[in-house]
Image 1 (cartoon, rainbow over the protein chains, first blue to last red):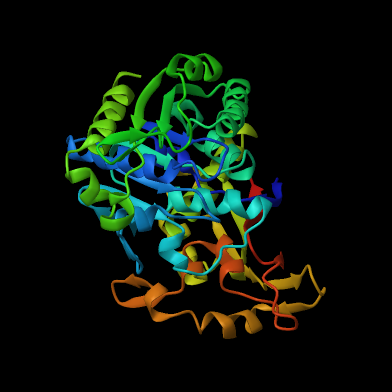
Image 2: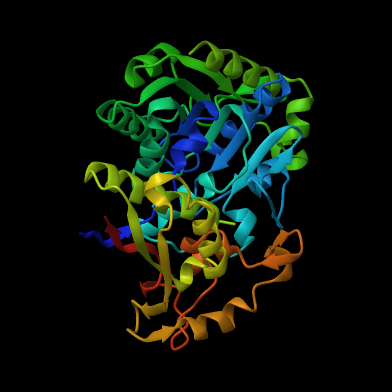
Length: 260
Length: 145
């Protein structure tokens, strides 16, 4: 006697095996564009790797991938027996769709985004990681839900905002969404909190009361990162190596993440 | 590169279904490989044969067939086959090709979902396109004893 099953059973990549070799996933998001998520994700990844942790950064901002630029890595990629070989910035492993597409736009819609993010994570030979930092895109759509679904049980969300009223308002929406999806929020990064100019501090995006920010977002501020023109002029890695306020703010962020 | 992982998923599915149905044997698995999945059929067949071990899978026959890919344009409703898309993929710049030990591959070999970054509508040039067939790997039929 024979019996049959079938009828177009889809084969999906099994990301859970790969995830079993990752200690923690740190999702860096805001829901808003232009607040510096990628800089925060890259800076955090660099600092964790400099402290001896096995760390990687996965860029899931498909339409605006900027992680390779911040970390100074470029195509082409190569593949080996364990999968796609991630680029390295120092000891930090890096994967981004921009390493496949260069300057081409990535006009992917809906379900294609889920497939693309799953493929990017699953096909990369990350080895064993203590920390995978995931740079989320603006918006609260496909990419965000894919990341929640892929990494949910191991993930902690770090919210990035500027001190501006408009930014805080949008970020608070992501905070509420994270709560409904049972994603743990580990803290807040107040980015572009100040800039140094003429021997003093200026506040280009306003001067937020840290306690009021914490109350509004329901999470502790882990670090206040300055707006530093050296990042554009010299690149993030050199700017962080200068051991100024930018660098110390990422020390505070790494300390905060390690405690969450 | 995907073939072994895909083969493992296929066999795991068949074995779990066999156990759920209290079957003693999986005698045949039919698989349809979408052209755009860029899975190499011989490699997938070899990988499946490698996994033909254990009392449930021993002697299992595998039938792997290809499903042609086709595209359509959301803007002008034109449609075209993979052959046309391949002409465009041949123009992917060298510095974006992924280096393998003895060859170079287009990025779509690894990330099939990335096709809108490299394929445009041959009629109107739009990037707002979709795949209407041949994107997936599917198990079409499993026969148990």
